[in-house]
Each structure stands twice: as C-alpha cells, then as structure tokens.
Amino acid sequence: MTNNFDKALPYLESLSVLELLRVHRWTLHKLYDLGVVRTLNAPQGDWAETLVAEAYSGELVKRSGKGRDVLVDEMSIQVKSRVLRKKGSNKSSSIRSWDFEKLVAVIFDTRDLGVKEAREFDRDWVENRANYQGYVNAESLSLNATLMRSGEDVTERLEEAAVALDSRLSNS
Image 1 (cartoon, rainbow, N blue to C red):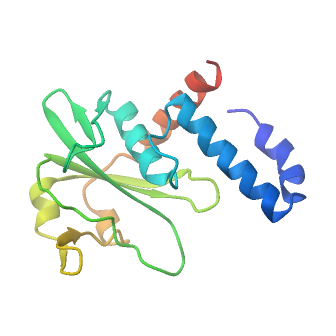
Image 2: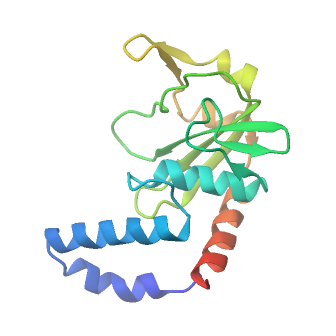
C-alpha cells in the first residue's frame, strides 16, 4: 500500500464542505467503476461483501439474492457489517432470510474503513442469538464485543483480501 493518502491528507483537510462532498461522490463513482462496490450508497456494506468474496474465493450473488451475499462453491454466506462507533447502534442490518450456511460479521474502523475485526459464524449459532425486530419483521444481531469474541476469527483473512484487492485494482 502506498502513502499517497498521507500525502493528500493536508490538501483534503483544506477543502470546503461542498468540495469534500464532491470528492466523496467522485470516490464512490470510482469504486463503483472498479467493481469494488455495487451501489452508490455508503460503501461499507458493499465493501464488506467484496472483501468476503475475495477472502473466500467466492462470487458475489446478484442483488436479488435473498439471505445470501457470497457464494463459495455450494456454500452461501450472509455478510453483515458495522462501522465502529463509540455511541449509537451496533445492530446489524436486517436478516430477512435464513437461507445461508455461514454469516461473516465485519467491524470497520470509522476513520478509514479498515477491517478492525471479522468473525465467521454458523447459521444455527446466529439464529439462536438474533433478536426479532417487529417494526421491520426481521431479525438482527448486536455486533458487540461479546459476539465478536465468538465464532472463527477471519480478521487477517479479510485484511489480506483488502491488500490484494487494492494492489490488483489500483494497477488496472
């Protein structure tokens, strides 16, 4: 990984709010064009799915894939992610279908979307710990410290995937 970000940081810090918003949108479009994200929404969910697909040598499921985000041979993986925050919700997005074998939970650093922690869980284990959310008629997980001490630690695997993707896509 290069230190171009460190070189650009003083310049970025000098930008106005409107200029920062333009850089943000340009960045999302660039990530979209590179195939890193699948939408122009906040990139953390797409980035998590892309990292898991790379780390597991899998394929991203088409957006209509209910309950699964990544397919590895015959195994389907649901991916949930959160940006680490001191305050606020640590709940995952809704789990609307249990049609997957594994769930990978990814916690990102708030400053740079670096992988802080990632864990893999069996579906049955997750199903026994999910909380029903009546207002959305779905389940969710609390991606708290207790949960993130369980399951298989795949943090290094996702960090390596991030470096591999960065190297491959930055040189294309």
